[in-house]
Amino acid sequence: MTKLADKVVWITGASSGIGEALAVLSSQLGAKLVLTARREAELQRVRAACADPQRVAVLPLDLTEFDAVAAAAQAAAFFGPIDILVNNAGISQRSLLKDTEMAVYRRIMELDFFATVALTKALLPTMLARKSGHLVVISSVIGKFGAPLRTGYAAAKHALQGFYDAARAEVWRDGIKITLVCPGYIRTQVSVNAITADGGKHGKMDAGQNKGMAPMQCAGAIVRAIEAEREEVLIGWQEAVFVKIKQYAPRLFSAMIKRSAAS
Image 1 (tube, helix red, strand yellow):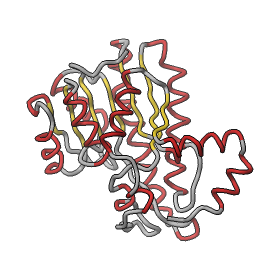
Image 2 (image 1 turned 180 degrees about the vertical axis):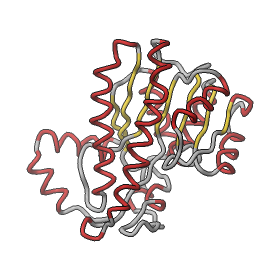
Image 3 (image 1 turned 120 degrees about the vertical axis):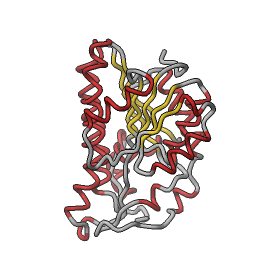
Image 4 (image 1 turned 90 degrees about the vertical axis):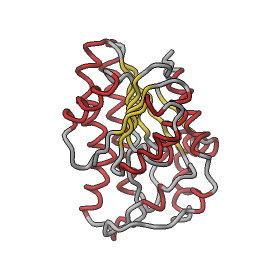
């Protein structure tokens, strides 16, 4: 089992939401942390909230424009080689296909997919040499099915699912674990920060998001999945039901999603 105590854990998107909750919980469990996001002040706030800030380093990065190899070297310079990479950074979408500019799709893919792949490739040589490492990818239930207003977001999350399923089949013999995490509605700012058809900010809290699971409860489920070395975990019972309906009754699911509220 992968225990977090004394592991070096690099968390992207660590300035709020699931990433912040994971940082606080991992610190409580004795991990040494490298926290990444764009906003250094927010990262410092999260660092101060951790159980032992002396074992927490801050590495501000804009993951839409960065040198992944250089960033990986900087991350390893704090506490040593990265044991667990948590790819959590991402952005959601709230716009119809007919209205969405191509630049918006490219922006979503750059952060949600390509940045994750770049960091994985940057860390992979060291993990392969050590015959050890754990890649944790925060996908989404939308990586399992599409929904209105999320064409680009669904595409990016589906891409993550395919990439890391294929990667797992390649690297498992080298002692490298991969865990795909598929949360449903979590009470974060993801809908507020989502981008619209022209790249602007949605700026609204979705009703489902507002009623979602608390970030710390989600973080607990993620940590348990990491420690159990699970290959994939769905977070949220209702979301898991939707995935099962899609799997076993696809026509029923299609009828349901066509009639779902676009929000």
